[in-house]
Length: 345
Image 1: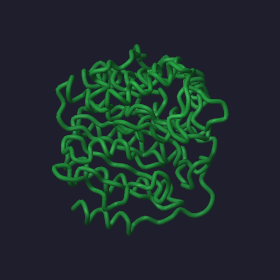
Image 2 (image 1 turned 180 degrees about the horizontal axis):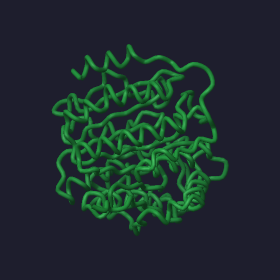
Image 3 (image 1 turned 90 degrees about the vertical axis):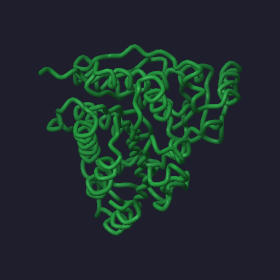
């Protein structure tokens, strides 16, 4: 039987959301798309048309006042949303398209028109709160996709895995009391935004449906993959998701300028492969990857390249021009054992 293709969502409007000199800039996706085209992967995937998220879907998470604030700031020419998150004259439209792209990929995957898929849009989303921009993020793309899958596509249980180097505090806050959306976050700890302690496991009906994996500085491939096998897999098997969303930041790479981790491009490829196999085991292969952070241009572009190949089942074609991390990896066995006890895995 011929499998449906891997799909992708991209629209060049994201290039207009750009502040020269800012680390979250349009070169991240520009270099990524050029590399995917050079390797022939854009032709090998199914492109999806991208439309902006509509306001009722956006308001499932974001307050009308907040949405209007973003619209008005952009209409006035842009400005700073907080000390590090910017908006340009087009950022409202771009952020609507980024959220819409996440939903478009989700819809294609859930409907079976695509095997799995990736959105290569920005701005990122996992720090955005219902009424607050944060950490370069404007709208909560992964959370909005999860809500759309439940409200429009008939799904009940969704798992979000976040391996950006920064804690996905926005996604966590949105679903912290919700037992229908489970959330797992890998992140360097302590590091901005300072949240994501391993004891934070949800609240109320959501208790036990959040798992934070706070990685110490210097954790790399071995630590990330051990945590996936010993924590993520049993957690996911117990939850039995109908869809897996991945907030994929590439800033845990050892050369990223904003963190101090030791993950390699090969490590990222192995994480993506594991996520695909987990989705194939638990939820008919329904896996959607969304771009979050990653600020070393070679790391993010090759990280996406290898992720796409993993989605397509081409794991043997990993490219890693940056090589292994220097020095020894930080050991995390005690942390893993602690989380196994907390979550009864």
